[in-house]
Length: 598
Ligand code: FEO
Image (tube, rainbow, N blue to C red; front, top):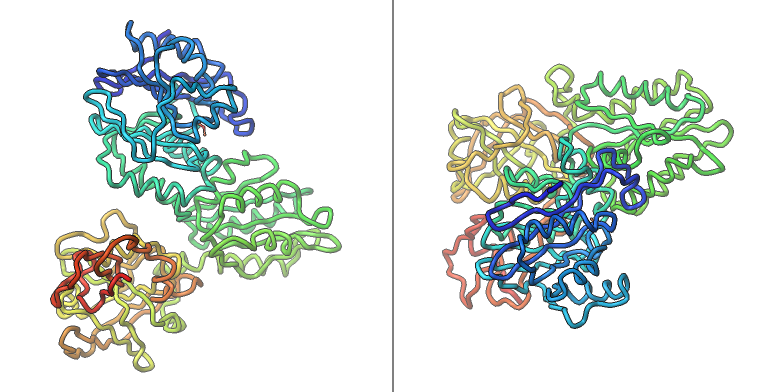
């Protein structure tokens, strides 16, 4: 039965669904099967995009023949050499001996390994950025090494504005099964590509320069609408960001005592306002599902028993999966159990040693065989620590006079929020100082719309950014004006008692301020404010200006360029002389914040 389908007027889907497979890549459960996608581009010259798994040779060749409708293909484009896509290259060549095979140098080296030949007389070897002219369709090849193998390249069709994305944007599941995209795409992403976040980020940067209307991956459905949703998820996943607010507990239990502690903790977390608590029994759940959850949420509790002077095997395997995929940017809590020499905590923490930007919750709960009263108190304290931000968000549970929030001030970076009577606004400042016991000075440039708003409203919130804040936050609040855009669009916020918004992520404290006095400082106005509310939302370190410069701001691409670079945002002015009145078009800082490219 035919399973070809039009993607555009001249692109036809010729892939296959696999419901016979037991484990994808020999390890992943795929209850709804798997799709191996392949496409034909019909033009003056005809190109076939990749083949399919070896078990579907005839089905695929039948689909291909139907799409070709008597014509012969001119090219087979090989984007990826993993056998789920490449297994039928030799069968294709035998069926269509006049077609050329398009790949890069690494593609053909692998082809020789798999087939004993790399079809030398048929090769078209392309470079990164190379093109192929089919007539109306111009294809551009963009190398995407390690998304998921080193030879991977994606292909952009500028005519139909289609990105053929190889494994990128793929998912588990056959195409004849209706299921949620994100769930199986996330499990697929973290299982298969999760280690290569940096490489996926590079691919996303390249994709951002293209006008893409459709994404045609090698697995999963063709994406045609709301592409921003998929691109945003990929950005979060590949930057190891937090996708969903909540806490995941991963545990193993031999006789049920560790499980009891986990269940008690889960109840306490829910009671303290955690919006989502996920509990995974590592001996019984799908391991890939547990791994995706570990990356999805910002906080994780690891609970296991001491075993053979180490830890229980499923927990060891789980942590190995995390560390080999660059597990980072999380808050981690531990519960250990042991009857005579508990050491699971030490082993688990040791295994996480190389992970970046982890913070550890307190206290570590040590159970000796079964929970006692002291353990129950420890679980309560641990729940308080893990729910610190949720407790602080809620008007009912927040400690609203926690003046230790003031200690979070440093020479740091802050989002100052205000409201002009119609909408919320916010901007980035680095000029917040404590000037007396309960007075804070905030200096704001008069050019900023927020300065004008605060002069009238006399109220503002200072959000103390923490080190997990991504560059997107700086772009959102620092590189555009609240007069013309809604900087909070699509962003979740909470409100302090003054009605102004504060961020629910990426901050460690929020101070609500009332303007008592103001001083005109020519370029800036210094607002001298009293503190009306002070909430601590997390224990992460404050984002200092230095930390931002070294770890968050993308390095400007100055290599081979002459001119001046903005020290604030990295914008490059190409020219020998920088005009004195030059204003950076991105971040609006003046010529004084530029330095000459050496
Ligand atoms: Fe779908 Fe990396 O192969």
